[in-house]
Amino acid sequence: MTLLVAALLGFAVAPARAQTSAAGALALPAPTARRASSSRSIRQRLSHTLQGLRQRLSRTFRSRARGRAADGIKPTEVLVVTTKKPAKNGGKPETTTHVLLLEQQEVGDLSTASLLLASGTRLAPIAGSLTGVGSVVLGVHSGYRFLHARNNSQRAEAAHGIAWSLQGLAALGKLVAPHTPGWQTAAKSLGIAGGAIQVGLGSYRLITGAKRRDKKRMILGGLDVGAGLCWAASACAIATPVTLAGFAGFTLAHIAYEHRDSLRAAARRLFGGEPRRAKGEGASDQSGQ
Image 1: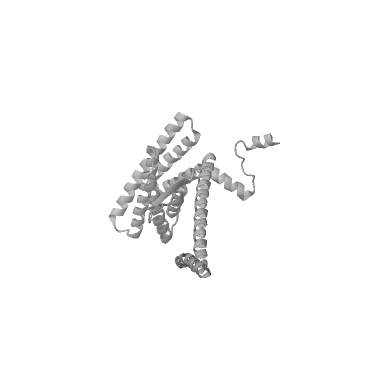
Image 2: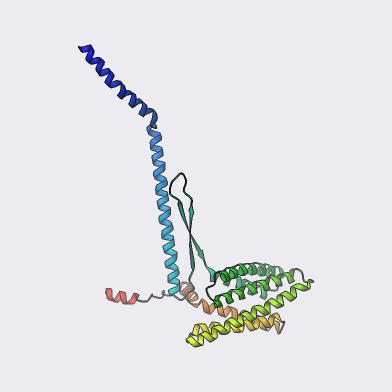
């Protein structure tokens, strides 16, 4: 009887041992499983952190752009580009967000300043370098603005930048190869065309500013008209030193007036002045007291 019970117990325990050994053969060793789980959790935490950082950056850049617009400064254009990769092995598609900052106006002003500096210097290598770099940057920048313009005024302003960049390249060609007659004609034609575009744009701003009683628009329009007339006159070699100086003066005055809020804020920081309070801040302080 005892032998029969032992035999029955042996038959019952054998399948369980077989299943346990099979499961142990299929399962990974404990250290390997822990490493795989740890690596997976690290990847998940890193992906979650990067996604949160992208969202924070996007919100920060958008709020900064809104703040600059509220202060009267030209807003920073924020492009949020989202790309999707197809799913792999039946999983979810991967989504990547890129936040691009385009300081459009600052790029144009820097290239404008380089062209003005090139026209004022007498050293040929420096003038050629500044003219080439400024013309290329201004041309690319103005072409981008022309393609993304929302109205005729923005298109005219971008076309004016394109004409100026082409004239700069023609002037660079005249400097590099002075005996080629085509450069002189091209520089003159592009200078007249760019000056005419700027005069037309300034006149449009003057008229619309007078209708809307917009002082800033009228001042910018008057500066554009003056700069355009001087530019066209200098391209035609009419009192070149005077007209070129007038063009530089009108252009610099245009840039300074357009960015006067940024210049005031920079002056406050440099000379230790108190920053300007936002609207409603004083009222909230008084209500809090």
